[in-house]
Amino acid sequence: MATSIIGHLDADCFYVSCERVRFPGLKGKPVGVLGNQGACIIAKSYELKAKGVKTGWPIWDAHKLCPEAIYVKRDFYWYEELSRQLVETVRQASPTVEYYSVDELFFDAGPLLKSRGREGISDLQKEILKETGIPVSIGISLSKLLAKLASDSAKPFGIDVAVTEDEIQALLKGKPVGDVTGIARQRRKTLNSRGIFTCDQFVKADRRLIRKLITKNGEDIWWELRGVSVLPIATSRPPHKVVARGGSVGAATADRLRIEAWIIRNIERLTDALEHHGYVCDKLGLMLGYKDGTGSYGTAVLLGPTAYFEHLAPIARELFETGYKTGKKVHYMHLIAERIQFKKDAQTSIFQKEPEKSLTGTANFVNRHTGRFSVRSAATLPLTDIYRDDANEYDICDIYGKTCF
Amino acid sequence: MCAGLAIERRNVPDHLIEKYRLQDRITSRGGAGEQEVHFLFRAKVPLLPVWHERNLDIYIWGNRDDRFSRLPKTGWCRMESIAEGKWEGLRPVQVEIPCSYGLEKGVWFQVVEGLKGILVRDEKARPHVYILTQPASHYYNVMTRHDRMPVFLGRGY
Image (cartoon, rainbow over all chains, first blue to last red; front, side):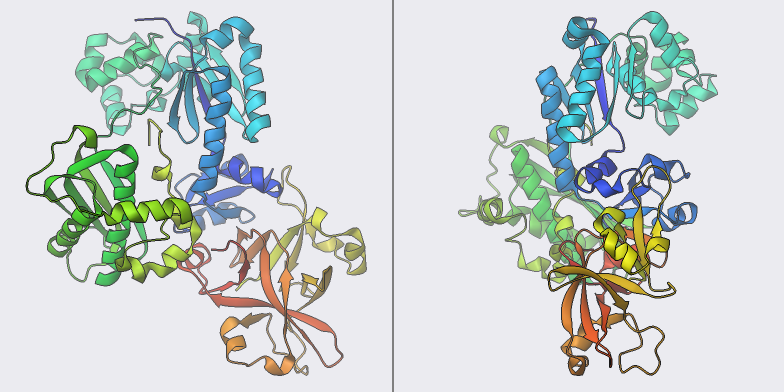
């Protein structure tokens, strides 16, 4: 396993920082960015965090702790613009970059650290602030997971280099094992039950025990935290296992026409995503979440691999007809394309006729020139209020190329 | 609706601060943030910043207290009532209300460009400005729990 020097760059309160780039009046103030229905805080400034407000909280709970906070509607289109600028700025310093998420990158920091030392990293941080207006924290270490822990400990707007044995030990000492990416609640519980609470205890534990407790994936984490890089920087996104589109439907509704309109809207978004990646799928799932906390889920195997709206929309409608519990208010939904493969590798089905002139292709062609959803299915007409709001055109999952969500 | 609004201090010229004695309305949200001038309907004298005939000025916000005035005793004007011609006799003129943040039921929300309002004159020809309102979008309703929202200039909610 090769020795590597990996950098992890994490934008500080990214969505808020993006808003401050175009609205400088927000600087230094408690700011919360609201999700797509105006109910929950999806990002917060450090000033709001200092008041005890947490991400995911409903606005009304946050308001109790910080009545002077300012709330901003999210704009993923703008966040992507700055996110891509961030990637480009880092690429100037290091061509090997993994676009991990909208506000996080991994990069090969070896050449920069070797040639210019810590000052080179500091200059990169300043260059990013100058070019994009976004403050970032940077962690440098021997593996991705260590670099991520280092950037986390450097927040806000700091740099932490942990490449020597002493530096790595200091980074891991006393840090809760649940802080490590890949160790979520269940794994943390399992480790805690064996007396492993901190990262330093984790790396001292027997490798075979870790593998037994939290599988091969856990063993990879063990190697990474010991400074042995086993998770390479992924410069391109690995193929998806599934592609899904959906989310909240705004005000919960039992109106069949409106629910169907949401389904068709999400099918259009799904076909858009499949086309972007060059995928086809041969299984479709519809998950409906109801206001009362219950839900339903149904799948259908298609007649062949496809990404055509003309094929997927009737199946989605059928899933709705058979799966919907009449009268229940739908709160959110997901349309899930399963059994994904690249279109170029897929075998054409003899049971499914390819549309001669695809509506999907024509609509996408027009929309590419005139704006997303300019041409859309008439079945989405009950959602005029949703389409009228530009902010609904774009969601976090519409930012392509990220290796994580 | 919108019970108050705020504008960055640097966007209000000094001569307006002095002329309308706005010093008491200059406030900060704490920390290193820029100061703002707050215009609240509940203020001793409710005022609004207004772009009118290419000038930024400060006018009286609606008619809160004058029972004897012919002007509607409110600070807001429904778009629907304009469409129904209920304000025609007052010869309303559309104006722009510059602000960065709006206040509704205690929640401060960002305003990207400003709000729309109407200017009418009282018996003494003094200008009064009412904020135009419309039914709240689902987003605004969830965010503020109010069923009416102001009419935004540019991107709204």
